[in-house]
Image 1: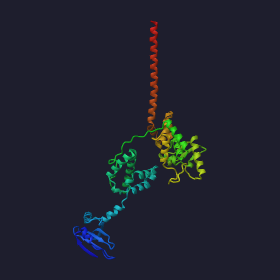
Image 2 (image 1 turned 60 degrees about the vertical axis):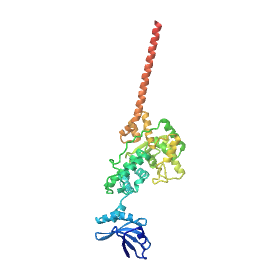
Image 3 (image 1 turned 180 degrees about the vertical axis):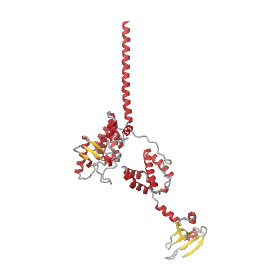
Length: 411
């Protein structure tokens, strides 16, 4: 091995000869003690810091020459040398950084350890994380800063809207909170409420009018496919999207005309028995016959061979096409559920009936959601009263006019 000490310059380093096979050449910088360049028989030239730490030699790789120039090598070497002189091993720090979890790692653990056991919407969490949080997913936990969180929120709010931004921030906040409890991260939660605020949302109270519901029903029947049948059942029953999509044949009793959804599959952990109407039974019979004709053996009404769940999961494209065809483009699938409640309210069914139909756990939920339906009913009632008063005013005017005419005639 040939050792040589000199001030590193590009010209001097280029002149260093490569060693014979089986040997190495190392040259040492005179300006920064501890900075060396190692040359292999294959003429690979690499900058290292080599220093003693607790009696042992520590090697720390900086970069390859000539991609890294002498000035850059010195700049990179100085903080490493300081760490070693103060008793810190930069290699251990590097290994720890490599071992640190990414946000994706922590999210995966959050789903497995917490979400799957405590929420019914964990699959939606996975889909939303993949759809919206991918720009941060590969970052180490210590690399996700408040500024990252703030910029991420602003971008998401601008591109996807306040609702999506709020739900995503709340999800990431929960992931970091669990990470702290599990000892995965010790730093301050970058998505903490005091750092990244949740913006006020305009609650959606979209209901289909009777004419809009008719358009949607006609368009869905015209399609006659799984998407059309799903929309019809969602509208007719008022059941949540996830439950309709995961509808199982074993839960349907054609003879008793019932669909029983167990509590384990419900968002509010409250089971529901739905008495099926003729139109709903017709759809189910058609779907069963279609599976028989195609020799499909599936436990699900809405079979989906291309998905992990083996049933239809998120019919976005079909739903968009159906809305467009029906001319009801500003409607969401969840609006179908609210539309049933609204129609029941408009037909003067009380809140208790609506609560039971939609399987709300608390009647306050029903009252809060359909308060504006009562407002509309109050408006119509006042309009009737106003019309009655106006009619009385007109009759009084006519009566007064008649008296004046009689008085003139008598004079």
